[in-house]
Length: 141
Image (cartoon, rainbow, N blue to C red; front, side):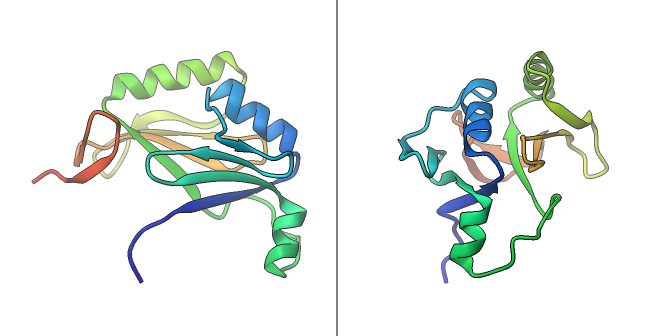
């Protein structure tokens, strides 16, 4: 199996609320919005929002999960970019469980939550080699 990821699908409790968050707060534009699923093209992959009860039914699992079991992360080019991003989130009243700080692994990061509590880490990782678009090229030596 190739080491790659094509889709991340988040099961959301209110599709319209989540769509508004990703569109209006994060400024993302869906490339597909059928009314039942919303898809955003990211850098080489897709993030989709899908009603949680439909996602669990499709996967044939119980719809009892709450809370965060994983995080999504986006790395920026500098600590200043991280701070500016969090300043914008605050303007929108976004839940920020952890303000950006220097972290044990040598980077700088903080966390925000989307309307369903999915955690996003926004970080500056000084060890990543990234291109101008934020795509990871490799690790710095």
